[in-house]
Image (cartoon, rainbow, N blue to C red):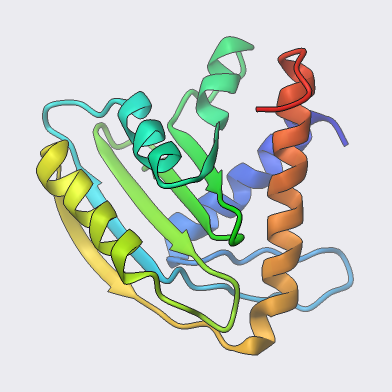
Length: 177
């Protein structure tokens, strides 16, 4: 499957996350499984949003960061919306996306391997970063739980994201990001 097709599949999952506050995708022949974010919130940045600052925030906390929106822009592939995914050594997954058709409106999601183990420090740092350091208005803050039954689906999502990192590295002519 090409990078463009994988990006499109990820975009579909991101859209599901925006619409349903959780990942909700399935492979052919499998039942739909839903994954709720440990923490989700929307934020509005009237003074603009710098993707680089969000990437630095994540890198400073030990995450590998992949800016899918930037890759799409570099290769002339619309849409050019914000789509950032990040993964750390504990297999926590973060997504930052812009709301389709909404200027300066974004969503933030953090997921941990089921069963949910909230990282209060990370979750509180994210809320503080977007509201105080960047000066965005945070809205619709929600904390959720996933049971052990979601673990297989979560692991498949992590593997899919890891493959995106590899493919993006190959696309950039590098082995590692």
